[in-house]
Length: 635
Image 1 (cartoon, rainbow, N blue to C red):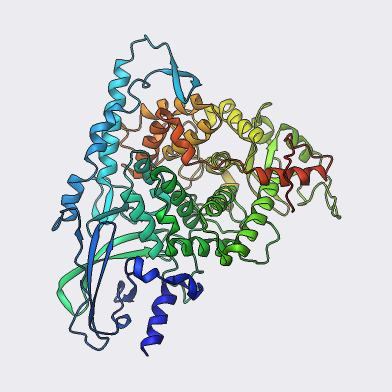
Image 2 (image 1 turned 30 degrees about the vertical axis):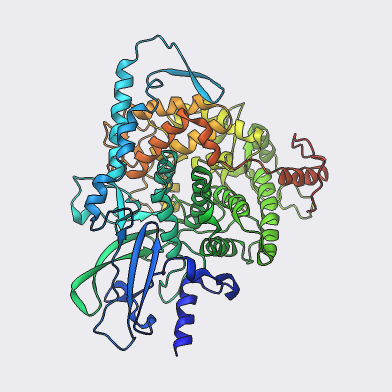
């Protein structure tokens, strides 16, 4: 009985991972808390603890003393008495909130002080070179310092603590919101924490990111169901909440527990595909920024990476190398017609595959996984660059497509009908520039411009150098559409009229030019900054940051903006949105210290480039414009 129950613990945490991978694991890592449903809340499962003994663990300067009881002794409770090793015993969450992060606020007025109010014209030796240095910009400088001070203070106030340690930031903290109106904005979202985590990493505050990575790992593939169906192994939650609940058998005492949401409580009940991908990207950034590779080398973290990869690389019915997902599975978390193979997921998928390959420890058990990973990287890169890309030349090619072509050498491989080209696109496409379309399926091309997918295609090197510059060329050419009075438009154009009613289901929140339907999201600033710095064009991001800086603080840091030019605060936008605050700060920090952006982006992989050139050589009609490397690569 004891052996069987112990296996249940191991299976609940790690799924079907091989037993040999856990050798020495329980001796070097903290005890993993397991919760179960009880009266609508998640409690620690007392039946998992088999005998009366005491187990001690240290983790992140936190000392935990667990009293373990016999499964039949219901009178004793599992106790967690957490203390900071560095002489902070007895510190409450409120105390920690007042003392942690003090240096960040005091140093914030030094960030980009000389840049505010100036026009950036060049980029030399890793520094932004402003023009008209002698001009009077003291008012902008004062404004910039004040805004950054306020942003760091608000980011600090959003920090969530678990057992006295920072583990994330809540989605929004609007002091004017009543407790009954917060919905799930008081939770820590993996997706939303990414810009917060990047801000902390760039400021040298590593503990909160480390804690976040390890605690969310504990929640991977939690025992949650929807209509008696459990999520796949490796799935990361969309969010989690720190709850204080009574101890089992003792209503006078309480304990803190982490309650994850895999989408079963979210609007639409859709599991997040992007959470695990973002988790891998943040894990790599943590190692790059902090120099601490011990986290990614841990056995439990290595297992977590493999579980995410196996979930994404699993064979299925789909013939395409892109990930097949449903509506609402990424940043656009409502019905917006992106079901299928949305660009955002493919760019994150590519970035996560490169990052995971970089971090995976070489061992016999990883050989097949790495081989599958390499094959997928090449296929995904070729598929996206070849079939998702559209510019004026490609648009004219689609315009002349023949239909119902059957054979391996068909030009119109997906049976696209030229009538799908909308009149707006014919007029909108500039002579110089291009972009990746939003989605591709048989007989369907979604020609909308989705910003996150295109920006992260640059960051991840999914786009070629030529394509990356073309995307930035298009952003400059269509500045009034994509930036205007507040960066950055989440997609363009908005769905309107009958098309909006059919595709969104007449969604009252996704009305035209609002929210995910053409709204403008300040959090996209940081991804724009990384992409522009990578392509040595930081003046584009600096111009967008200056526009945002003039309004964001005055408007109380809203979640998104409405109308074509983003003139109004979103009609249902939350104020003091954390990732709006963090996205602004990360963009400012990166423009000031552009070399730090190297820790975020993925460099172009030489072997993938070589493999794609070999594939291009077999198709004389396809010119990639890349030099074939000497090293050969077998496809």
